[in-house]
Image (cartoon, rainbow, N blue to C red):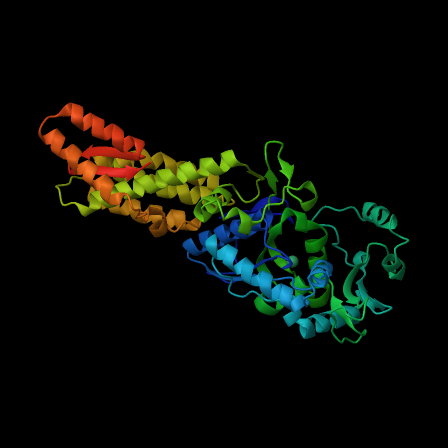
Length: 474
Ligand SMILES: [Zn+2]
């Protein structure tokens, strides 16, 4: 299996540290609001990757953090007149509700920055001891230039970084630093009502980057297999995580760095951001969009590619999901009846080939588009066999089993997908269908056609199969 490593900028053969096991850390949200579709994209991309590893037989130890203290948290809590932990509790609950609706597997561990303060302080002390960090008036900074690999992950040029940082040289914080590109590990309390913890450097709170180094090391070990996050985290967040972790432990931090692409919104494919007013929260979206459709839409684009969020693209995902649903219903319908069967050699062979194509595509840096294309090609053959007089039940059962497995990697619960929505007009429809059957028996074609049209208007499609009449909602 090959995955693209941002650090080396090429696809590499994936080799876990321990055979059959994967340690995976994914940067989680700052919990000051509902998650937006950009956050959801990252969560879904890495959940899909995790599910594929599990499908391939790996045990995945999956850690994803909650950033529950930072400037945004402090400002929002102050604006609402509540405490930072109260704000965090509220939006962690919302995060879990939204991601559960999107059928994201729960993380093995969801650590919170504020629950790890002693470990964070210890980690910073280690960095000071190793000569990589220094205290300055109650803040603690990291000497970026001292770490010789600084800038490698995100291909940053140190001279350019310094030039950029020197523009802010008059900021109060910048003046406390030895070098403009140094970054904060610990921030001293600015106002007496601001949330803070005791530390060797006085009252303060951790910077954002340090929490991920500490939690990844604590819950997964000094070196881990995979670290994931959005492309926007490559610099400075992940660059700083590498610098902190490797300077503290003296060991390689992460073997494979994976980054998911952005979400753009609308026809002009603008990058989503709050300032552009195209900031869509999952909470709002799920009021009108089926969570399975949103999940499938996001999972069906390869994780490194940009996703364009639009009504048309969502509609397209819905239609594809409907095709899967129809095929699964066709199979189930056919497996239930007891008519004779025969062996469909071509179908059996195509199922095997599809399985190979699926794994080959997914093994190539989780190429979901190619994997899905292989499955789409199989559907007409399965449908034709399920609707023929001589069905191959064994092959159909196998096709069903594989479809259920494949779709579950994309986060689709097929049992939920094919659940027949019992609505109040079911009885009426069944009565019309029976009336039409009666008309056909009596060779009253005019009446039979008229009833078919009437059903069509109700959004019902009639299918005359060798086993009798079936009706499905469009
Ligand atoms: Zn992080």
